[in-house]
Amino acid sequence: MKKKNRIQDEVKNRDNLLAVANSEIESIKKRIEEKTGEALKLKENIDFCGTVIKDLRKEIWECAEELKIKKNSSILLENQANSLKRSNLQLKDCADSLHKQLSDTISRKSGDIMDAMIAQKRGCDVQHDRQVKTMKRTIQEMTMSSPSHGAKLKPYKDLKSPDSKKARLKSVLSYLKKEIGEDGFDGFVTDFVNYVAADPEFSFKLKLSDIVETARFRSHTIPRPAIVIVAVIAPAVSSTSTLSRRRATTTLRHSVLQARRH
Image 1 (tube, rainbow, N blue to C red):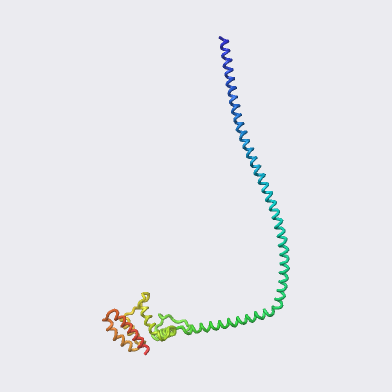
Image 2: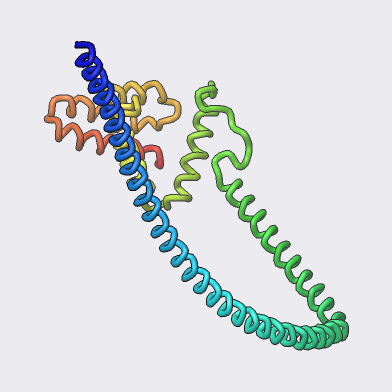
């Protein structure tokens, strides 16, 4: 019985040893597989490095060829630069010669040039004086032709006496008559009054009642026949149509202007 147990123990020990050996074998196989993978990767890296080295050799050769070409170009450019330097020296000599000739010519002609400049300046001064005199004369004529004759006039709203207002009106009308012309002045006055009366920007309106009242108020400045005309025409106009009233109003203004002239 003891012998049998001993044999079983030995078998068990051998089985354990066999299991350990199998485990070591599997571990060794696994390590072999890992090393094989590493070897393959190393081979791939070696092949890649070989390709890189080949490309680098090709690039080095191309750079060497390009360097040769640039060296030849540099020699050519250096030759061209030397040629340009020689040309520049020749041009400088020519420029120095021309500058000397020009200096000599200027020295000889400086007197004539100075005289011509002085004469030109005198001519410009004379022309400028003429222009200034003409401008002053024009300004003086424009000033004298204006209603104020160049003076600062009092605002019309500040005029108190009828004589001062009448004088201001006469000066303005005289100026307008010069600008417009005597032949068309009456027509201008008529159109002007109609325009002001029709424009909403002005408070002045063309009404018969206002005309009659104005004629009465300013009887000392408007001749008596004008007031008579207003008194005669106003009643007739008030009873007519709108178109007839407009025509009568125009006739009334014209009659007042005619009466003023007479």
